[in-house]
Image (cartoon, rainbow over all chains, first blue to last red; front, side, top):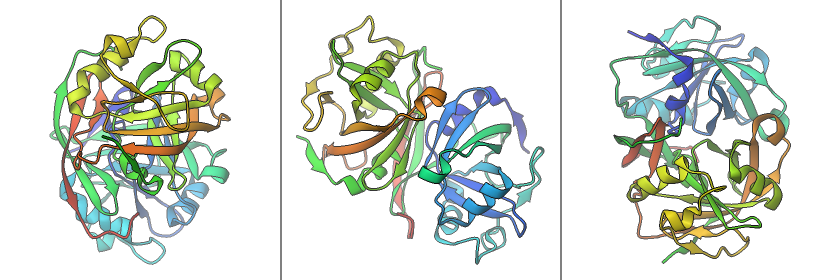
Length: 177
Length: 177
């Protein structure tokens, strides 16, 4: 069961650099895209930069709907993540083909992926870098987490199908946020 | 001994989301900053987006010099990385205090950190998002790697001094670059 997650802590989910699944809802069926080119831009409200190529089906839906969910998968889902990366939503109903479950979001129309341990409901707040760089600026409106996953084994793309799996977490005295 | 690393493969070093150390050289001594808010923007030449707060000493040096090195540390250096994150170059000579070794870069004046397993010499190519977001766009001009580190145990910041250490790498058939 997912719980509401404080917006002030969202940066800690994305800052380690996991591959994420971006869900969008356009006029047709909802779509899923695998993405690892993203970064935090601000803490609270959480602002996220995302690179979404204009060759991707998600690009057009996101430009039009201005909403998406950033879903964070763990290693159990790695085959489905690669499947989503290898196919296009123009031809494939990815929720159906990869056996993923939609849940309704609370603030937007794009669905959450139930199997992912965290879900971030986002709206596009700045499109000025889209034309030159395919760079969308998103604000996270609402975050959800599976509280049972304390040390999520997120996946981190090293290129050409090589994924680093998150290892142990250590804690050091730090003044950094 | 570091070897030249193909620019076409640089994305695979940053895409997994490691904490990096950014070195700059201004009029005074060279400086080091810990950073994890970065993302790939293009493959080749490699273009990287970096968030550098205007409260950081590095911000002013980078704006003026328009050059930096992105150095990628592994877990052996985690205390030094946290040390760099907890101090300011305005007051501290971080190379001296943390016992890190400078090597000359080939294209720019900012130094490489010898102890890091990879080093990316960068120039600033776009400052248009600096005023609003503290977002610098960099081009990687030259990359170096320690070829002995096949599965680098990079560190990934989860917030407030918690670091995920890179675990095993798995390989799946993927059409993704």
